[in-house]
Every structure is written in structure tokens, then in C-alpha cells.
Image 1 (tube, helix red, strand yellow):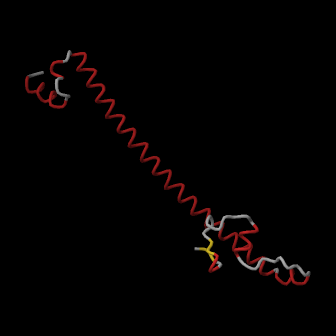
Image 2 (cartoon, helix red, strand yellow; image 1 turned 90 degrees about the vertical axis):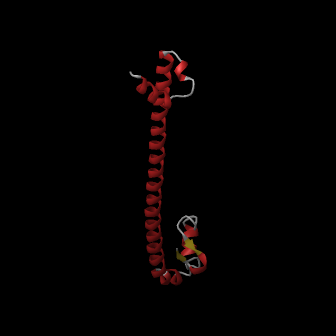
Image 3 (cartoon, one colour; image 1 turned 135 degrees about the vertical axis):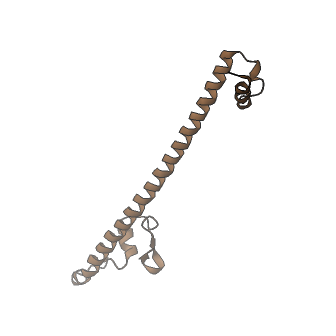
Length: 121
């Protein structure tokens, strides 16, 4: 390697590297290469974690939508059964989505239920 090649290499190495033995220079170079690989791996892991978070958010939204649809369908069925409850003197009929959600022991926030409007948000 000519003088200009050595100068280009030494500008990338830590100061004082010119005084190191060839084996020490080789080790320093390997360490830099491993550091670069480590940075690439860290970035790939970060990207993967962000992608998993996004996928999880999509699945949560899908679950919430289905849960709301099922709760609404159950409520509609219970509402249609109101005469059934009245004919038998049952006073514990479901009168609101909130009552149904409570009877199912669901967290209203989990299914995005708003009590004041008795609806989902």
C-alpha cells in the first residue's frame, strides 16, 4: 500500500493507530466492523419491534370492532326479549349497553363504551 493509501486508512482510524503494531491495527479494524454490524442489528431489531407494535395495534382494533358488534347484537337480542322479561315479572332485564357490558364483566374502556351516550366511540 502506498503512502496515500495508508493516509486514507489512518484518517479513519483512532488517533495514535499509526504507532500500533499490524496485529493491533487488524484488531482495531475488526472491532470497528463489529461495531458497524452491531448498529445494523440494533436498527433491524428496532424496526422489527416497531412493526410488531403496529401489527398488535391493528389486531387490537379488529378485536374491539368485533367485540362491539357482538355486544350490540346481544343487546339487540335482549331488547327484543323485553316482553319476555315483562311477561315473567323479571325486573333485571338489560336496559342499556352499559348494563350488558357490566353483566359481561367487561371494562367499558376496553371496548370504547361511553356511558353518557350509551354508545361506542
